[in-house]
Length: 113
Length: 111
Image (tube, rainbow over all chains, first blue to last red; front, side, top):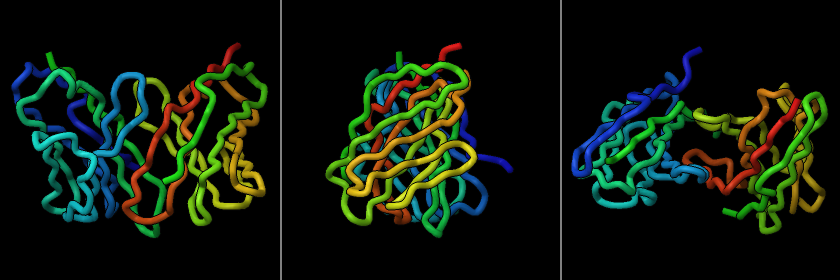
């Protein structure tokens, strides 16, 4: 079946631009997670949704980062006024109860020049 | 969540078993041990998880010590496609529990 998909796969932005990254979770999956992975590091948690409710956003590094999942399926991670330190791979994962394993998408590689 | 300690890198000959260790001495009673791997330029892929008993699936076996302070992931017949970074993660099996990745072990399978 279809897995988690993310778009775009690659994004180059000039410093100061706004970007929007999309995640299509596995159909029917209630939980959705965003992670950030810097080069050579393991992924780090950003935020978590249960259906349309954002229940944990403790990992968002600044108020320039904003995530939404208005209809409880597709999610968008938006980064405003991008900075060079935002360059990373942004990973989306989804899971479904009973508490299940997280299935990851391929990620979006963001490069801020 | 408890922290884990893994060797940064390991080599394995193709066709041989790969045994990847993980220390998690501060694991609490109801935390699970999860293993994920990440092949270059892909998202992490779930391998296996367990609480107390040893587990086996089509990908690997997970051996957890009786005191639960360490575990070993076993790939019985490693292939070149198993070259990846392997992450050992401990955490609660609750909805919404984010995964806390460490540095992982970079496994290189050599012909």
